[in-house]
Image (cartoon, rainbow, N blue to C red; front, side, top):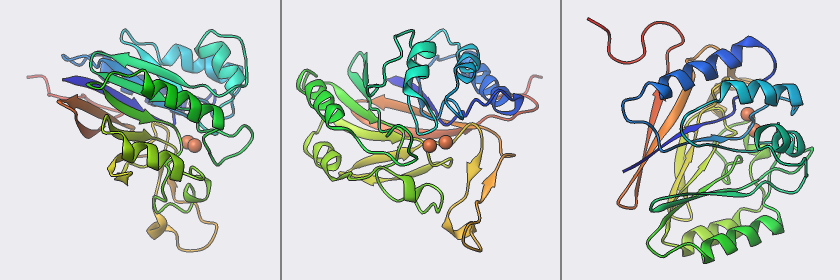
Length: 259
Ligand SMILES: [Fe+2]
Ligand SMILES: [Fe+2]
């Protein structure tokens, strides 16, 4: 069984609120008796893409298991690359593959620099096609990116979801190795089907955004900074993806109460 922890939308902004929430979640993960095989952070790492925000993220996202990030619309490809990946600050899409025993995770860059909405660039489709070509037949694949490719009943996020998702949907539907698609951006947990596979949207560590049913008048943003931060624990077992939401309390004990 492979165990992946998915965090999303940490929005490091040089203030304490979001950092404390990430530290609490990372503390929870660090003390699990069964450690995750990897931690994924699905975008909006920084709130405004500043170098200092990535330095804050680098300090808070320390882990003794592999931790992989992909960019969101609030990120800056150049600064993220330089500070978090230790690479020269290029502005090309950040597409990377995490390979575990029996599982390949494709981390796609769905951002359009300077815009809130997303779209996969031609270069990213080529990268994904090449990755799938070189992935063994018996390996499961997870496709991960920041922007959900479908409307999720959010007045905030639906207008800036992934544009033109049909091409990706065809790739997902045609490849039995792809067992799921994981995204962030929505600041709420969501689950539906995309290309016949599970689409799981992770909540934000920083805040929660409510659905269309919470909006009473145009322009209202149903955002809540108070709920406990939450992550998703994904297991991959015999080609089956199971996704479990875990809220981590900001105060008190995490897990079993001591006697
Ligand atoms: Fe976000
Ligand atoms: Fe976002």
